[in-house]
Structures are given as C-alpha cells and as structure tokens.
Amino acid sequence: MKQKTIFTCQKCGSQSPKWLGKCPDCGAWNSMAEETVVKTSHSVRPTGSAQPVPICDVPPQTETRRPTGIGELDRVLGGGIVPGSLVLIGGDPGIGKSTLLLQAMHTLAEEAGKVLYVSGEESASQTRLRGERLGASSKNLLILAENSLEAILSQAAHLKPAAMVVDSIQTVWTSALESAPGSVSQVRESAGKLMLLAKGSDIPIFIVGHVTKDGSIAGPRVLEHMVGSVYIPNGLPCMY
Image (cartoon, rainbow, N blue to C red; front, side):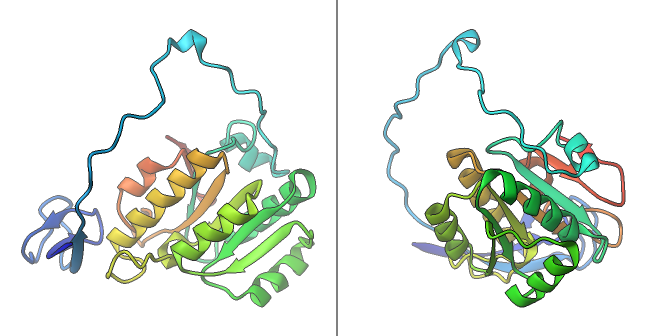
C-alpha cells in the first residue's frame, strides 16, 4: 500500500497536491483540507458473466413502486419507491427531513416488512421519542444508532430490509480512510458503497444530507449525481 497526502476542497471536491488559499475550481476560500490517500494494488479483474443484450430483450421490471403514504414525496419519486434506488433528502437543519422519513418508513414497514433506519446523529431512544410523537411504532421499523459504514453494510446484508435510511451521510465514516467524518472523501466513499448496496441488492436507500448556508448540499457535488433523485423539503424538488 502507498500513502500520499493531497488537499481536497470541502465545497466541490477538487484536489490539489499542495495547499491553496482559494479553490481553483469553485473559487471558495480556505476550503482546502489535508487528507491522506491510501492506494492499494489491484489485480486484473476477470471477465464477468454479464453479456450485452438488445434493449428489447431485457426483462421488464415486474415489481411496482411502493407508495410511502406521503403524497408529495410519492409525487417526487415518480409514484413511489423504486427497488434499488438511491435517494438524497436535503434541507436545512430542523426542516423535517428525519420526521418525513420516519413517517414514510413506518408506513412502508407496516406494508412491506422490515425497514432499517440508521441514525448517525441521534441515539435510538431519541429516535423512539420522535417516533412516538408521530405514531411510528411498527415492530418492523428497526433503529440502528451507528456511524461506521462497515457496521451499517453488515447489518443491511444480514437483515435484507425492504428499505433503508441513513441519517445523515455526513456522520458516516469508513475505516478505509483516515479523514474525518463529513469530509469530501468520507462522504464520497460512503455514498458510493451505499449505491453499490442499493443496486446490488435492490434495496431502496434514502440518505439525508445537510444543506449549507448558500443552499447547496453539504459535501462534494458528485454526491448529487450519484443518487437517483434529490428532494429538498423546503424547496423545489429536483430529479436527476
């Protein structure tokens, strides 16, 4: 393994081999933070079993969208939750992101089975208090107070939930990186692993992202392009 130090803009994710007072890409001042990158050698990947096929021969998706019980959220999602989708819920602190998702997951847990709600900011007891106020008390709504990405992925693989929430992506960290939680590299790596989980297991995953003072999603802009849709409760919904 080889280690090297780079400087990453915490606004846009731009990287530089040396520290810069102003990001050359987004123009932000004092946004370059030092991060350690570990490079590992990879062997040549063998050819997979998947083969290209004509689009008309691809089997159609048989599973329909699952409604969340919240009309506006279902409308933004195109009629309900799509299996294997990765959805980013953004908004200012206290705007109602966690409340919205807890209500939606309660409805889904009652109809579809186990739902995993990962709380990285609140304890399990705090989440329960919120759920009691909302009437979200389904036995199938499972709360996991955890910040480690590896532990989250392990629980998801074991439970195979009908849906999953990660609240919030800025609190999740992976031991594969030495940077602090919330840094560009941590957010990008965590979101990438969650995307692979969603696509590989058909688990719809909602990730919560905080919004900065200028109204953009905190973290790298690539985060917004990795997900299937972006919803900001206090603004206009955006579909990607």
